[in-house]
Amino acid sequence: MPDLLQLTHIRKTFPGVIALDDVSFSIRAGEIHTLLGENGAGKSTLMNVLTGFYAPDSGGLQLDGQPVRFASPRDSLALGIGMVHQHFMLVPAHSVLENIMIALQGVPLLFSRRQQRARIEQTIEEFGLDLDLNAPVWKLSIGAQQWIELIKLLLRDCRLLILDEPTAVLTPQEAAKLFQVLLRLKQQGKCIIFISHKMREVMEISDRVTILKKGRSVTTLEKGEFDQKKLAGLMIGGDRIPEWQKSLPFSEEIVLEIENLSVRNDRGLADLDNFSLRLQKGEILGIAGNGQKALAEALTGLTRVESGRVLAAGEDITRSCARSSYIAGIAHIPEDRKAIGIVPDLSLDENLILKNFRAKCFRNGVFQSRSAIRDNAEEKIGQFAIKAGPPGSPVRLLSGGNIQKVIIARELSEQPAVLVALYPTRGLDIGSAEYVHKVIADGASNGMSTILISEDLDELYKICDRIAVIFRGRLIGYADPTSSSRAEIGLMMSGEVSA
Ligand SMILES: Nc1ncnc2c1ncn2[C@@H]1O[C@H](COP(=O)(O)OP(=O)(O)OP(=O)(O)O)[C@@H](O)[C@H]1O
Ligand SMILES: [Mg+2]
View (tube, rainbow, N blue to C red):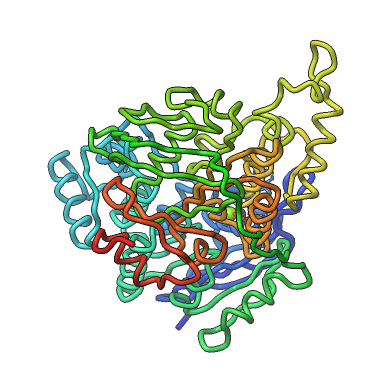
């Protein structure tokens, strides 16, 4: 098969950062090519160079054997190269249909609104997707928002699709669905560049894998030449993976009590229905099943509770705001890191003190103490191995995984009594994910209790003391990771058995 696209000796620097040092690789027609590399290795930047979002400092692209230069993503899109970004680019207040239509402006095939709608519906059906065209985007889960981005590219009939960590925001079922779609596209002769930190997926879907490390392409391997271990070894190189141990049995003391909590979502349906739960001191409690997000929001003061109570250390915090839940010692790692986890335009240093900027240690009389804020940032950067850019630059310029590390570092800095963590290792590379698990386990040994919300049963099994299973907004029961099988938990999640 001839190469569709070649990238040679790409270099891209930003002020104070060498994002890409020297990267070369090629894409063949009809292949699924995975890019693998640690947080900050340069994957997203490379894709942004490929699509014309950034101009490379040096190096070149060849499409169908001809040199090309893209001045903007519009140019690459015109030649059939489309990308679903790691952080989506949708208009939240507009409907799904409107968001898709904006993207189709200038596509000549479509005339009336009715015809456009029909074509969009046909594509949704052809790929078996589940999407309500009239729903406003802000009401959709991140997974559903991603389908919109993908549909935009399908409607444009792109021949090279780039998906930057698509599965980080999908449930296992949604990811399986996505893989079906990708395999189908491959059969139609399309090329796909896939980025993921999940080795199991990489093994499942890739025809070839290219490994990036610190802005350089290390090697490209064909199917059959790699296994999970080999890939991890190449990706991590000489870096050390942190080690940790599960904490000792936790204490009897109850730190958080949820009594008959009911929460309705924006569509008026019950996300939590008479839900009760008790969290003990030093416990790591996993939550599986749906309704998890409503639970996290209720605990952190981000949603209105319909009925029921939440008690933190015996004190009623049911109707408190986000700030008072913070004062009650509840830290929160949210699902949507860019929307509510950070203030994108503030610097890394400032984002690290968002919650405790009033603290004396960061003040100098009535002024903020710049040096204390900087020292705090340096400490956190070292501790969490955050790959930071030049001081003072906005935090949104960090790589996806590094933004996640900033949030975790901030949330854990005040030694919270309770950590409510939604998908905390989403988008983290193997070493960083392990470090977050270590922080949670070490926290537990020091008496921190964690509610860990994750789609990843492997993660829940690995770190949790107990797993609470929710079905239709109710607690079905608790599973013990040391004795319950995945099948048992699966059945509980579908509401069929209770433990
Ligand atoms: N616009 C920018 N300005 C300054 N620095 C940037 C910019 N974009 C990326 N960087 C830096 O370039 C490096 C590579 O980032 P990139 O986003 O490509 O990493 P990545 O491999 O996609 O990582 P992740 O797995 O965390 O998403 C990082 O150090 C990042 O901070
Ligand atoms: Mg990235």
